[in-house]
Length: 286
Image (cartoon, rainbow, N blue to C red; front, side, top):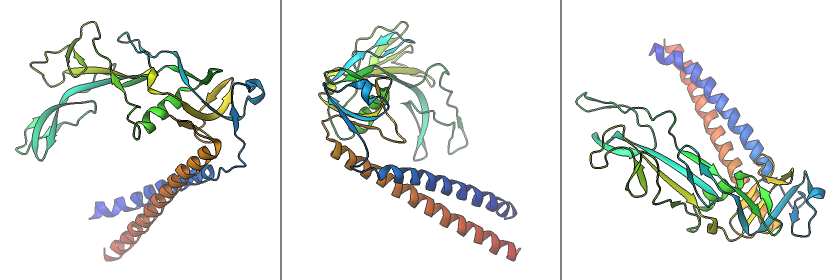
């Protein structure tokens, strides 16, 4: 009980700090949600003069083009798309409903204690072999205006939730020195007929160049490149969007984020107050 009481003040301070962080982030999201029709966003088309719009917030809509393909130099793997993803999985122990199993996972599992006290040790992933994402370069529209890689990642991660077309495809029939195919698009140095704890398998997938017909990107035009300014203005969609539509979506998204962060902050403050009063009551009893 004494130890518990000693920890309460620290818990209160930590909760208050996290609440303040939530409120600060929430305020920032709220500020971004106030973007309205008066926020100056310039639509760039084939007739626009880029140099005149340098340093301004712009929106570009058009057919995307891969101007430089991504590659993984460690394995010598390239793709003709926008993104190349390396997935690394290790054969590990895991526990489900008190039963110990072996499976592949790209997440490092902790060591496991069996229900009879037996130990199951999971080795660490090799330090030089991790999951990785490699980006190509993309340009948009007839003028082939270059955009930063953040747009590609935003389109890949957000739109894949709602569009079947934005899907990574496995790269098959690869020739990787020292590795052999072990099924389902994976490659390994180990014996796939006799997997052992610590064995590694890898897979490469990519976002094909034909996955995007038309995109809309919005951000700061910096040195002739549209850059994703998350703290001010950054927008990416795998379809054609007008500026009013972008503003509506941006306001809604940041407004929801702000409300969520404020709610978390309030909950943290309530818990902190409860912890504080528990400390006072316990101190009086002691």
